[in-house]
Length: 223
Image 1 (tube, rainbow, N blue to C red):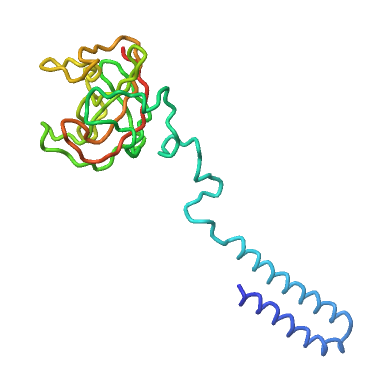
Image 2 (cartoon, rainbow, N blue to C red; image 1 turned 180 degrees about the vertical axis):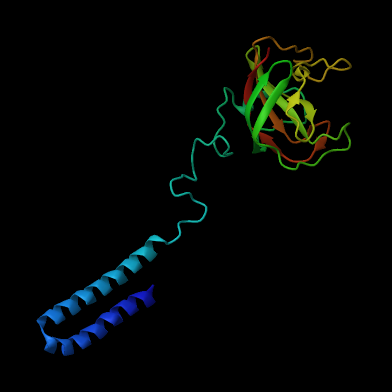
């Protein structure tokens, strides 16, 4: 940038020196010379302005974007809009609350039909599988729901890598050969129209652990 500015000004000075000689040739020639000098200086200033405009913006920040969008649902720092606080939840299965686990996964939608299904906008990472459980799962699905005015949470079933469906049995305690939920939901059976807030998390059942990471909670209505 300095080099271009110097070259433009140097050219002007040189032409002015020659102007002293050309003045002897007549006023018209001198006027033309001055105009040429002003044009050279203008071009030099234009080149400097062009360079200034091409200076790079801050890396990683889109020109018209906000890197701190407070409404971004994928941002784990955005508080979850839930009708309960985690402190109100009594856990009836699993190896403890996942409230403090890092929210690294995002479920964009979920529903209950013949099965429970969900889609990810941010899927789980390469979570380690456990060989201690059949089929070597690497995650769990859980839920939170309200029963008789109180909130209960459950780690409800294992998940395999990439799995985005699970049987509706995840909402009931009786699995045929055993009841998986503790008191007071030992005999719990979901009611049609009941809302559950489902989530996916790292292994958190039967003593199996891999990562302390989870998804957001998404409401589904039992059908």
